[in-house]
Image (cartoon, rainbow, N blue to C red; front, top):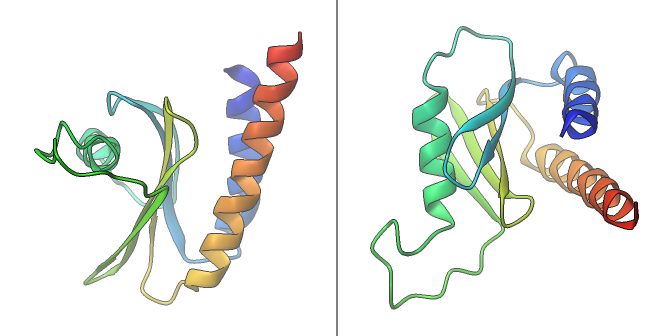
Length: 127
């Protein structure tokens, strides 16, 4: 996991200065925060991460009969965007950004980071 955290810190640390991304968080499938970068004092990590992981698990949100096939969820909030992205079955990415953040840029960053994660996991599975 340390290699993943280094990639996370390096990748998003670089972009946070150039975008209106306020908080980026990695959480496990139980909603437990694993890593966070933030430019604001945001002490509700557990709430955001639990919501994010719950969105991808139909049994948690009471959708037992539904099929959830979404890898990303964008929520427009009054003060910006909240984005959740399913990296793997065990790992989720959450992003909180300001209202002037470009959605297209967020999607590019998310997909680029996802590719890095999958490359790392493929490499680790070979070893």
